[in-house]
Length: 204
Image (cartoon, rainbow, N blue to C red; front, top):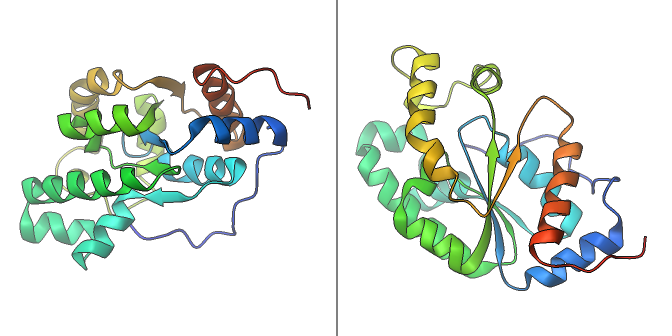
């Protein structure tokens, strides 16, 4: 999936700069690893979160495409899903050595046991949990989802959710991804990170 051509993101105003700075310092070299279904908002929310915390944003799918020299749909079509998943795990392992950062992962990435272990060791994982109807509305805007190329997208997403949600639930934190401004979700995430990292109350 290609990089967005939208205007550059700006820091979320609802997050006090001292709090963002304290969370960033408490992270140290760890990454914030966003997991969840396609359409959960990992890239769009992740970009805003990264700007707010003043750390890099990386999209694992973009990094995979750059490493392979082809798009993810083309990798699926020419090499198959198992080949893609192996490359995905290797790329994420490499990226996790480069924290601190906000790392958006593909929908199936967290299903890999080694990836989950690496995320636990080198990061804080956050499940962006979205309801089926929200995911459907969002994925219909895109035509580059390999797992939705055949059959009924709703049935496919519902099946994937049944398989993946119990694994996503192993993430360190869970935040609801719903139809509210992304700034509100970023504010929630920063507050949850502050609690997780035992950041003391910060003067605003």
